[in-house]
Image 1 (cartoon, rainbow, N blue to C red):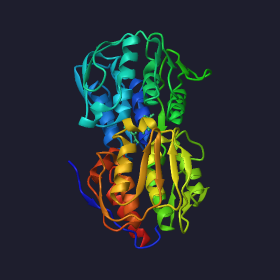
Image 2 (cartoon, helix red, strand yellow):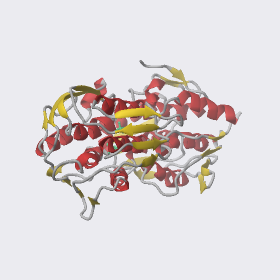
Image 3 (spheres, rainbow, N blue to C red):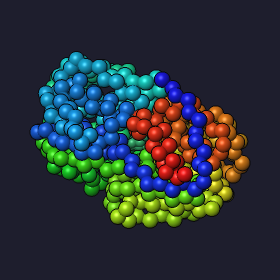
Length: 422
Ligand SMILES: O=C(O)C1=C[C@@H](OP(=O)(O)O)[C@@H](O)[C@H](O)C1
Ligand SMILES: C=C(OP(=O)(O)O)C(=O)O
């Protein structure tokens, strides 16, 4: 159900410390590995939001046991994977691309579907690859059905992963459990969001899986045991960027505690981006602190590696002095919505000056006015509207409920941040 929201304005510079929940991307990798492991695992500080709860529910329906811990974590006990089962992917790329390669190991029929917009997200590369690896699956997009025999031969497969890094990550995450392991070769335009593949490889290695990344665009996972372990999930740095942006646009100061010194999360790139836009950025034991300038500067930036930051950067750019050019993100037309078109439409609807390019967008300065900001069921479109609403009176976000995809209570966190500011 959509939830209309009047974006609160900031009464002055925002000063706040904002703890952010766990990383969606790490949580959903860890849940798959814990489900396929040889023994029970414990997951501390996972994200509990729509995307990760859908992942846990899907794995439960296949026979994996999830027990809630008092500290908010999960104890995960693997089981023999089996159908019949119905998997709801919601709008989660990580569920629709990471689950089928795991479900291929199950015995029985497993049906996949998701939200209406999920049916248009690219899936063909994953499903073709699974067929090539010996799994039985019909279709090229949601909805589709898998019929498993309890094992997958595995081997080598060539895919075009220019549409999403998740095609590669999904196959690697389950590949150790295939009889011959898996070798994924990419052929096509450059793979986006490469740090997310690094995250997959690092998470697999932490579970004792041997992964060879010695050749560009080829990833090899050896067959073997996926080790059980205790996992600690980092805060979600991409979600954190929205709160840091509040400091950037109001000339305030926001700290996100627990920012990892070393991480594979692409959200970490926000440090350099905000500096280039004129912010002071400091990483200390207290976390990451951003102090906003009097006026933000535009920038020319390639976001191919950190494409999920595009909505935040575009919102900042719409409030900056000077032109911003965002490049390298053609594939985000296949994210939760066509984010290039959506950002251009909504910025211009508020009086802004944005234009689409083939692989991104150009935003020129223009005075913004209040009005309706459409989220297109996309959590990051909704949070981009919230950023603009801090300094442009009268911004109305049509569907703030979409933020539950990766943040359990975004409006509450936003209010707490602003209340601390007053
Ligand atoms: O593997 C992951 O957890 C993700 C990979 C990226 O997908 P794309 O490669 O499709 O951009 C990213 O944008 C998405 O939010 C999460
Ligand atoms: C692209 C995103 O999500 P998904 O995991 O659904 O692909 C995102 O969160 O920006």
